Image 1 (cartoon, rainbow, N blue to C red):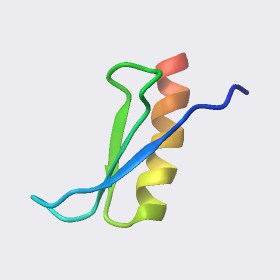
Image 2 (cartoon, rainbow, N blue to C red):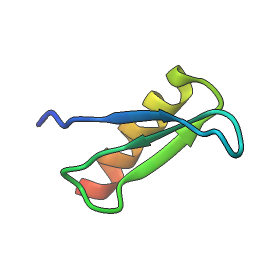
Image 3 (cartoon, rainbow, N blue to C red):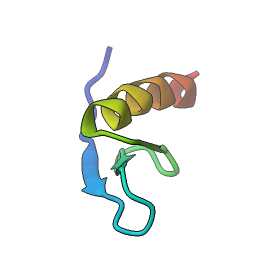
Image 4 (spheres, one colour):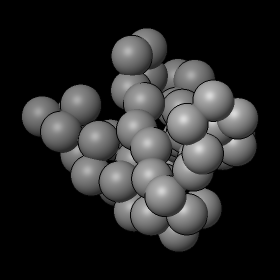
Length: 50
């Protein structure tokens, strides 16, 4: 599987974290914790590539 850069940012408006993959336009996810956001973005990457 290819590897992608993930940008993880704190969501100051709603709390939690937002994960963005710059190489895949529109591939974004979030989570209540950093770990949640990273797990969710892994799934989002898989779906994006399908």
